[in-house]
Length: 234
View 1 (tube, helix red, strand yellow):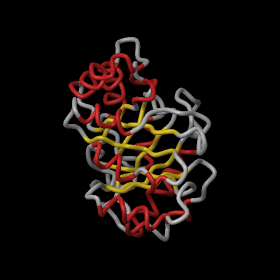
View 2 (cartoon, one colour; view 1 turned 135 degrees about the vertical axis):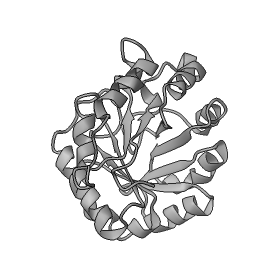
View 3 (cartoon, rainbow, N blue to C red; view 1 turned 60 degrees about the vertical axis):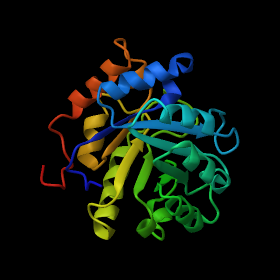
View 4 (cartoon, rainbow, N blue to C red; view 1 turned 90 degrees about the vertical axis):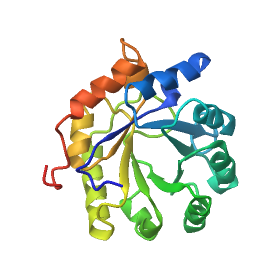
């Protein structure tokens, strides 16, 4: 893991790709240097949208050796953790708001040999993860309200990411990825990296780029080139 001053990971969100050309889209961003592939799973209950399941995660695993990053925006995620692990997920993230027994769910993910992440909605206090921070590999700060792609970035998120980085550094410096998801593009990515983000999830800014997904990855990479966490000595 990185504490904020290392290489920034770009994670294209498949929520914005053309599913009829899923394999090609994944291969394109993979070849462009995207380190992670972000798979958004929604159930129509926790968020007002329904998306994909383990079969898509398995299909993604079949066309890339990159990190498959599964974000479960579903109620009672513990019911499906094993299925996504079997489908080939490397990182499985659950929402603190969606799992009553969060500690147990994280133990389940790690017990399956996967990296465990906790996601927080914009209105959920950072204190929601303090009691489980010793059992996570990643903290995901939502920078929009989850459920749909293409939403406007919440400006207050930059300060929130900085506070999340401070929490990580006070408890487990250099060991937890800090991911951001929502409204990430060439203009917001540098601010988020300076605040301490290490993994940038971007959907429409990548797959909706006029030059295609590869150009979208390169544009965000260029935007954060030379940028580092301001508290990390860079």
